[in-house]
Length: 151
Image 1 (tube, rainbow, N blue to C red):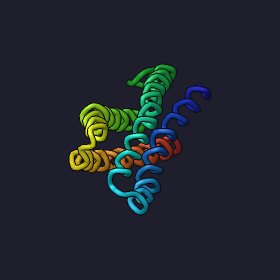
Image 2 (image 1 turned 135 degrees about the vertical axis):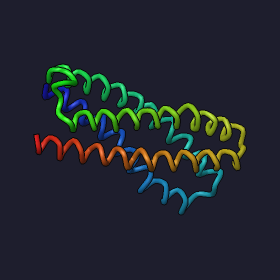
Image 3 (image 1 turned 90 degrees about the vertical axis):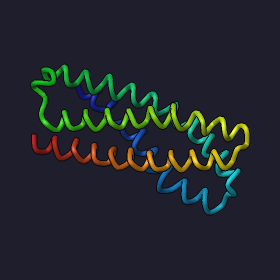
């Protein structure tokens, strides 16, 4: 059980920590020192690398989370905070899927074609959705810690 909790925690840290770093540290620094075309190229390269890690993290979160629920006796035996974490996680995964397929894919094409205005508009949409997912991720961590303490 401890190994699955560790895997789950590390996957969550990679995903939520990566969003925190990108949103709170990288974004303001990129705006400060790069012109829009260079900034858009940077984000394209960052997303390409980060999203590979997120796909892995999502897979590990699903496998480890569902396996731990199974070990605890299934969803009917799981405590309320586990259900809340699952619901928040599934919403985050849906938002991530939308970001990847509906926003990042066109963003990547706009950057490749140097359509800076369209790429900038897509980046703005991605930024807002990452802000939502970051907030949900931090909330999920709070639910996990507080729920486990009250269990």
